[in-house]
Length: 217
Image 1: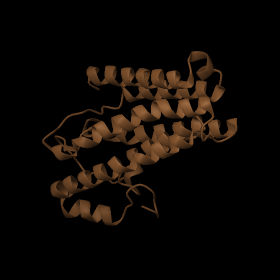
Image 2: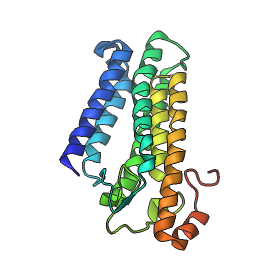
Image 3: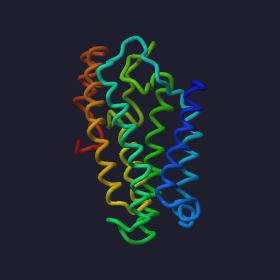
């Protein structure tokens, strides 16, 4: 992985948690909840694991630059999701009761993070943060890609929901759902580009698989 991306991933994780800690009212209130301690450990473990994935931000041989607007959209949602779930948890606004909700959130966040990174490990250098065809790009239709075409995005959604529930936040759940707007646009752009690259092979693959959730979408 590019050293710059490693630094960006680690810095982004620190900033995200720094904002959440501010929203929670400081270090002591934040870490007074065991589920949030667990959430912190899981987050940094996933950030460390991402170093070894081979993912990148390369525009490759051909990129759909018109889709780059989703990156600031994800960034904005990410900033809001860092602060408001923790803040609403602190003031008790529109929250769910009990540590069971928090631990459920940690579990979902962990599962989502694993699903998010798994396809990046599978694709390696072919996985880009941009909608692009990479050198030596091949269509992968086995393993985690056998049933769903965008498993990493499913992981993102599960993880975002888990983060919100770790703070018992109804506002956070809405923010997690907002990710669907740029995600759907991203999936549309990716599938259009892959059809142009792989033609009937990708169309056949798309016809027998689901985008995110088998049997639903």
